[in-house]
Length: 282
Image 1 (cartoon, one colour):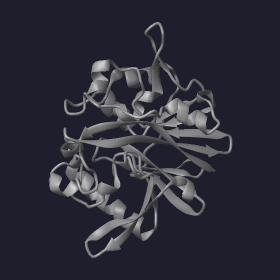
Image 2 (cartoon, one colour; image 1 turned 90 degrees about the horizontal axis):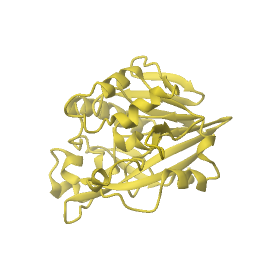
Image 3 (cartoon, helix red, strand yellow; image 1 turned 135 degrees about the vertical axis):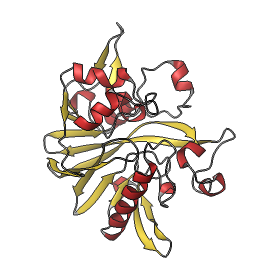
Image 4 (cartoon, helix red, strand yellow; image 1 turned 120 degrees about the horizontal axis):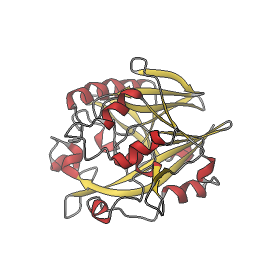
């Protein structure tokens, strides 16, 4: 197995929304805001080369939305999904599988493109797209709180293409979905979000998606205002961080602008950051 970080682009979100009830005087120590209270976030995906499979986890925000839509999110930087994949020596047509942790626009927007004739088509024509039945229903019949994050043009064309498959959820963990990859299911941020757990070089690497957006979110109470069930997030996060510290998991950060990976340690204040490093250093 070989792993490649894929930088699909960066955007900005309100710091208060990203840290919920935690006051700015605390969260700005790790995630400084600009004059408009906006913090910088990455949309870092992960490419997994394992045998004859090339698996992409999440796809970023894409480029097909309107100028007005993108104006809310202050996209910046030169990175793109395609350029980053190609920089590692692969083409978009080489991708065999796309795992979508969940269907919020900043995680799945790059999965679908708008063609010259205005149609919506899969970006990865040779890939199977993976979600799970419970989250798919949640996203296609959205609640009022999340409706603006579940965009039909990002989601429905996947099913219409015939390239959609569901990962079966067995409790909170599905094993051996792919060789060397399990799926952890969590429900606090959105219903049935999937976190890939990779067995790599004798270590476990977990793609954190929105259970832990950045190392600044490690303290237990630091939960996003976007989470639909924050008390469930607290429980899920607490249990996960404890296990991750005890078993020395490596956490791959999707939204942390500065840090690709981190490890955790137990302290008298609870679980805290141990080290940060790049994926290539493992």
